Structure formats: structure tokens, C-alpha cells
Image 1 (tube, rainbow, N blue to C red):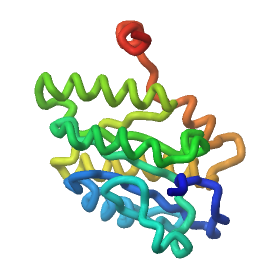
Image 2 (image 1 turned 90 degrees about the vertical axis):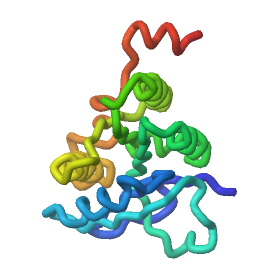
Image 3 (image 1 turned 180 degrees about the vertical axis):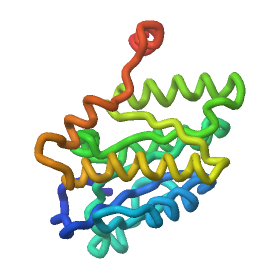
Length: 186
């Protein structure tokens, strides 16, 4: 089983590819459609997966993946577990501005707060950003798509040279507050 590496293929001209990984596919299709429909200056390929690793049978035809988005529903423990298990199938180079977490249902009860803390710890340990999204409204999905497109543009190298994926990652990565830091170190 080979690890998914961001630099194993040559990039296509004026094209970026985002991989949306979600176990339950609740937001995945809506988000993919919103990303494709947004007006942008470059071509976007959207790939969908339930979990990693990706199948090996179409590895040669698969384009270079510029951004991997783990969609985690805080209402589902399985969603979080799927994201955690999928991380082990990524090459360490992916964590240099090529991975982010998108969480949904952050306002829905006490169990979600515990899972949000778990996602934040996971993201902080891999130096990845966490984006909260509202998936129940079209405006919420559109806002999440626009935010992901901005991150994708940077991670694919389609911005001025002063902004790199690693620099963006340091600006947007999830950091732990002091109370979470104490729990994380234990």
C-alpha cells in the first residue's frame, strides 16, 4: 500500500485538484457542486472518496491532488474515526499546506463539543487548519466552497510567489489553547 503523496505527479497547467474525503457523503456532493459552480480563474477537478487509501487500480489516471479536505460531521463518531484512520495513508509532505479539516454541526449539543476538541487536537498535531461550515443552507455550503477554493488556489501554487502553501498553513493551522494543550500533553 503506497502513501498518497502530493508531489508524485506533474501538475496540469492552470488546473487544481481537490480531494473531498467524507465517510457519510452528507456534505460531500453539495460541496463538490458548489466548488465547481463558483466562478474562478482556473480549472478545478473535484475527486470524492469515503476514506483513504485510494484504490490502486486507477492510480495512473488519477491527477495530482493539490488539497485533501477531511469532512467531519461532529454528530457522528464514525466520521471522526474515518478521518483519523485515513491520515495514516498520507505522505508527510501532504501536511505542508495540502490538508485541512472541514467540520459540520459544531453547534449541535455537548457531544459535538467533545468531538470538536478531538478534531482540533488532531489538526494541531498535524499542523492543519480547521474550517467550520454550515451545510444545512445553500449560503453556508457556498461560503465553505469559496473558502476551500481560496486554500486550493494557494496549495496548488496559483497565487503570487509571496504566498505559499506552507506559509498559508502556518497562518491558518489549528492551534491549541492552554487548557487543550494540557490535555494534549497528557
